[in-house]
Length: 388
Length: 85
Image (tube, each protein chain N blue to C red):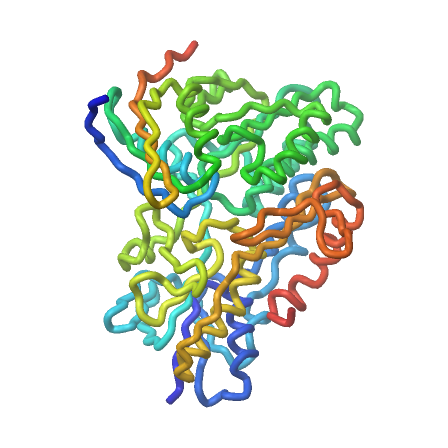
């Protein structure tokens, strides 16, 4: 019997898991067939947005034809999934194509959902899409003086370090232009501290203050007065601005809600170890789409993908011992153009100051920055293709 | 202390900033004077939630330790602070 494995989404999570499944089962080709469904098959290297917003990279370098990154014998369907009938194991799409599955992997990620914020306006900038990052660069180029406010639209959002990184890089950018003294940079955190992980916060918050970046805590955006250029918080405080950069609200895709597989907030309830969707048969989820209490980041999907592949394989061959994801995430945390921290953590251990062999993780280092640069060059050829 | 819990949120297993965000979402849906219960197993909630309540003008009525290493935070929604417009 050939098992039909359908993957919804061809971003980082969907592409890596397709390749991992293919590699895991390549000696058993008669056992499975992979189909990937995606609306565009444009694969975007999203960590590059932080470079685009400062004119240091072109978005063209970050986008590849997603079909070229998938296993050669996988089938691709360019469509929007509209619903999954979990009883009949059928997927419906907007092109009236009905796809049957034996296993389905939800890897459709999180989408930018500015419509969720009544106060959102096109004059508010962000850097969570290629176009938005390029627009922000144009704005920054002409910015000569005034106050830049960096805030968060809602939680959760992709890449938790990104707004803090953006604040630190804004400082670097204006220092390089020689007008830092003309520019006030303020980071408005929704939490009682700058960053959500204590061990990282103890490093990052002093760094922010040392670099002259102002910090407001417990600032959850409630309303924006676009005429007066004031942001009001739920906590009753307010901040004025000349340039407003807000991490936009994120959301899941409609098919998850319409298929009755979402939790109350729209994310997919997922077993944080086996990555099975809770309450569903032969359904797995990985990456940003899940409700797992860890970072929404490409690295998370990278470490989850082999677990999903192994567990689908286990179910096909009748092995009841499923592999467990330990929450492993690794990421670089830029502190300036030229230096970065390295975050390495899992469910049990928060990011540590040092690693094996005395590697210093939580101090701004040139080495981590260059690792990140090198990583970008082999992301498409090695990571996305599931080779490492 | 007697009060009626209008809305109860189970945030067991969620880590910072999950519990605070759950509380914020819940507080938005109840009326001034009503009580929200947030159950959290995240140790960070002990420090974070009282500070947030104080800043946002809500009253932390009490914190009850539960059997499963979790805590129940009972929060009474306060008046929205008047903004200087």
